[in-house]
Amino acid sequence: MVCRNCIIKNETCCTTYSHFITLRDYKRIRSLGKKDFAEFKPLTAHDKRTALYQKRDHNYYYWLTKEGNILQLKKGKKKRCLFLNKKNLCDIYPKRPLICRIYPLWYDKKDKRIRLIIDHNGIDCCNFVKDGAKLTPTFFKKASCSKRLFLKLAKLLDREIEEYREADADEIKKLLRS
Image 1 (cartoon, one colour):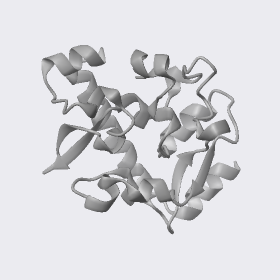
Image 2: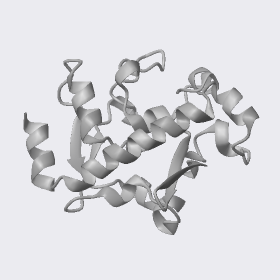
Image 3: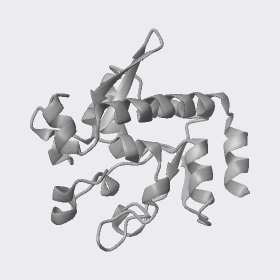
Image 4: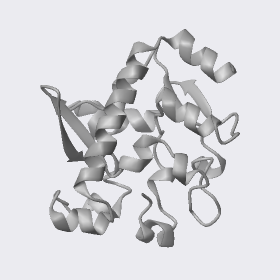
């Protein structure tokens, strides 16, 4: 979801952070005929300065590095997502990565139980979560997405992250060359 307020202000999460993608995300985007949109490289210095990276208070994609690298979308001009068009809309919206679909939420998993949490990684760029937002019915109404759908996305993302964890660096490099 890209918030309308962000579109109007020309500020979106699509312009700030590295975006991890799962192997299935990669394949979904490739199915659209897209090529040369991902890279397997280290996190940026900006990513490593975030509170989430430094505190490590719950599972997050930063810990999915393989040989120090992580599969992520390439950045286009002005460090924007390659798929963000001039109107600040996503050109691959139906097949966008799961991390984009679930934002501004993330999940925490304990004892095989998934719990939704606010993705404070974007706190400095997302007006939606800046003001101490809580996961209330009002939050989900403003998000135009039900809690049930967010939970479904979190479970799917968790499965795809587990699949990614099982892959080795050579597998990922081979996928990018294909």
